[in-house]
Length: 196
Image (cartoon, rainbow, N blue to C red; front, side, top):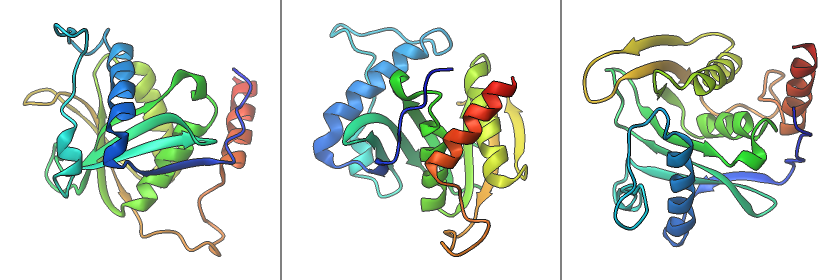
């Protein structure tokens, strides 16, 4: 495991329209990373391409950037295009730049994102993307204390492994069960790896 990167100054926030370019470039990195499980080819401009404009024009579409010490470290795209009935939020895409992976940032940013949007979440992974499946199972299990549902979708416009869970109302800071801080998450991640 790499040395944890101090994440005291991390943020996840709505992306401004002026941040479309860095978000698009991170999407290109993301799509390249998934090129072994996501059947895509680059176009005549050498890009995978991704339709982002709806994320600043449709109210249900919400783009987020993740930054550490004011540097871009990842992104999240959220919309309401759930894959099975009963959901409110669909995590369309989620990406952490390699430098920040296995540092606790991915889990911390996801936790904060879930807290920002109470309600029924759905998110999914490609059938062969085993690392993502492991990450999301661990993250969601910790977030919900094991109270989530998983199923495999085998037909339709989207196929893959899908998790569903409820995000409660924002946690009261005085609550003894409040979400853990990033340093606490990094400490547990390090101890879990040491035991593995």
